[in-house]
Length: 469
Image (tube, rainbow, N blue to C red; front, side, top):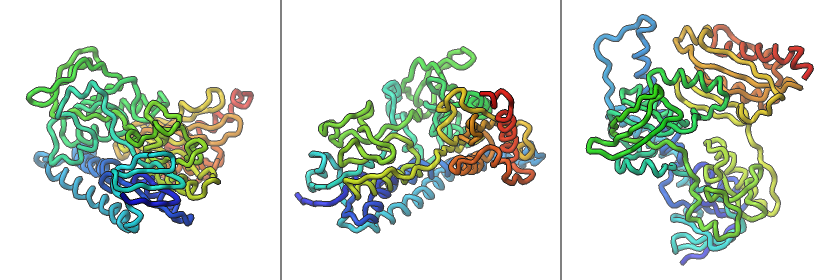
């Protein structure tokens, strides 16, 4: 067995782990990184990039379907070649993964340990019986994996998760998607627009990350055009049959349906990869997922020498957040016993459905009732949106009633990925609604809808009732 002593050991070579390693090295620490699986990050291999490749193909297909609305008619029959679609998805996915792998390979070989790490104690890791590492500090950045409810196991070998979709050689004829979260909605709509028969079934009524009931209702209505989505479905039975998988469920109209599908896609969330690390023997406070309690500002686990970042922390599972968390954890691990809160950006979440979704700030459900006002706009009659036949969705913007400071927004509508960025920058700079309205708005652009919502919000802030409160 080889014995190594370092300042910082990082477990996991994903987005957070790589950021932690580089941050620790930048502070002069002797650091190494341990990885048990293939290199390539969740985003590049099975997340952000391959899903956007599939969505891009779906958008091209949908543009043809929508063309008659402009008086543009396609001669002949549209043909979606599933093999060509998935070939491009895999080819471009591998290209993005290759860039990440190249970055990992630039790390000195002595700093890269392959294998599965397990804690012997808080300062000691053992890697597959071949290496023992003593570290002054350890960063846990082991990522996450799909979580699959036990009920869906009845689908047998016809049960897949999003990781599997991007390995398909061609498109299936039909898919039942369980989970109307970000992954389920993005993949479900993309597959449907590529000619796959799709239903999306959920529990509890949630639709993506939206918490504002007005925006959520507008989004559900819009995305249900061409895609059956039931956010609170009553599924009675899942069974493996000769032709694939059979699902018995009650539809929104109260009728009971028994349908067969080629595949059942479980998009029912992810769980942090912290089991198997031996954390339960370290005397730490662990939550239901086995994640140790930590300070979100420093990423430090209690007053220990341990830090946790990225999807393993299960705090804000987004790539840019994982990179920030890795940097914060790596810097603090290198500077122990001193730690400092790291810079956290204004929360921004985007869903690449049609219409797109953007959430800026903590979200509607985190705002204290009676302390804020909300302005809004429907995109049904918004000028540029109507020109493009993309006039669906709703935007709600929020501001502090006492100061007029912009707090955040929830949006479902066209160009949400771009408007979301504008609003995140405004919130990060603590702008007031009045100062936002002093910014330029060109004509005709979708952003004029944002101006309408801000004007509505400004009027409410200036109302006698708001001032009196």
